[in-house]
Length: 185
Image 1 (tube, rainbow, N blue to C red):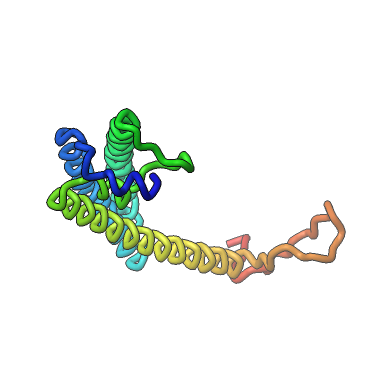
Image 2: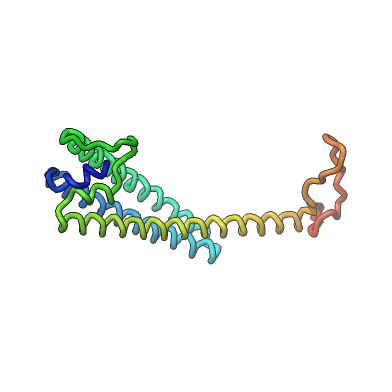
């Protein structure tokens, strides 16, 4: 939307129904992401406490919440497409063909709706970034847990891992006392 479009933004009157619908969707999306954040934090606690049953329960709840979030995201995209169509019908389109951002949309709204839209958008962004951080930390915890598990298994089985220089396809015959446990016991 060019500079001339911003100057004429006040002349466009977007459907109040679409704006209200978008605001309601943003609130619902924020609630869904907040619930996902709570589940991610539950997973984190379960990972730290090594509580497999709590981890499984959190993952199951998270799957349901993800489906709910995807539904809200689909509705948000549909609502934004309707708003873009309304703007296009009024003669305002983006030259680069990219999707309309909340910041750009705010330029077409009255001050009260503009403030609410940006506030809800910022809340959603904040919670989404926090969720991303927790998920990255959980991924690190899982990697460390897997590394520790593999190390413990190698101690028990005597497996030293793959060798780089060796004869391909040749398997060494393990001796009975290769690991910490006696296989005969």
